Length: 298
Ligand code: HMG
Ligand code: MG
Image (tube, rainbow, N blue to C red):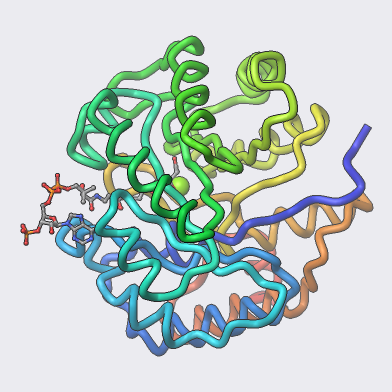
C-alpha cells in the first residue's frame, strides 16, 4: 500500500529562512543551498520574490539565486506573489515558480494584502506569463486545515479554490497546513474529497510541525497514495503572517522515516545532516529536528 518512491521538495531556503529574525548573509544561504544540491534532492525552493518590506530576510533573492551553483537535474524554484515577483524570478533564471494564496479570507489578507476574490486575477496573469515563458508553475494553498484568524476552513471552500488554481494552469498544487493544526483523520477526510473531485491531479502536501503532528499526517497521506511532500532541513521555518506557526516538517526526519520504511527518496542522509551542520555552524544555533539532535549528540 505504500508508494515505492517519494519526491521531497526542500523549501528550507525559502519557508525556513523567511521567519528568521536575524538577517543571514547571502554567502551563507548560497553555501547552504549548494550543500543541499549535493544531497540528492531533486527540487529546492531557493527564495521568494516578494516585497522585501514584508519579508526582509529574503530581500537578497536575486543575489542568492544568481550566486548558487546549479546542479544539473535539480530544479531550482522561487515563490512569487505577482507579476513583479515573476519578473524577478525570470531575471534570476529560476527553473520553476510557485504562486500562493490561502483558503481562508483572514490569512489571505494578512499574507498578501488582498481578498481571495482579488487574488485570482493577480495569480492568473502571473501564471499566464510564466507559462508563456516556458516555466512550470506550482501552486500553494495555505490554511487548508485551519486558519490562525478564522479557525476551521470549510472543505467546500478549499475545493473551490483548488479548482480555480488548477484552471489557471498550475501543474501541481501543494496543500498547506500553515499552522500545523491538522490531524490524520482530518487529512484523510479532506484528501479523499480532493481525490474524488480532481481525478489525476497532482497534489503535494506541505505540513508544518507546530504541534508535532506532521509525520503522522504524512503517514496518512502516504497510505492514500500521495507521494510528494514539502519539508525544510532541520525543521526550520514558519509563515510570518501566521502567528505561532513554527517550522516545516524536517527533511531529515522525513527522509529517515521513509528510508526506514523502504521507500526511496533518492536522498543521502549523511549528506543531508552535513548540510544541516553547515547551517548550524553559520547560524550558531541548533536546528530543531530529531535527526539533527541525534547528530549533535554523537
Ligand atoms: P501590497 O503592498 O498590497 O502590494 O503587497 P502593492 O501591489 O500595492 O505594491 C506596494 C509596494 O510593494 C510597491 O512598492 C511595489 O513595487 C512593491 P512601493 O511603490 O511602495 O515602493 N511590490 C513588490 N516588491 C518586490 N517584490 C514584489 C512586489 N510586489 C509589490 N513581488 C504583496 C502585496 C503580495 C507584494 C505583499 O503582501 C507581499 O510581499 N507579501 C509576501 C508575504 C509572504 O511572502 N509570506 C510568506 C510566504 S507564504 C507562506 O509562507 C505559506 C506557504 O509556505 C504555504 C503554507 O505554509 O501554507 C507558501
Ligand atoms: Mg509554509
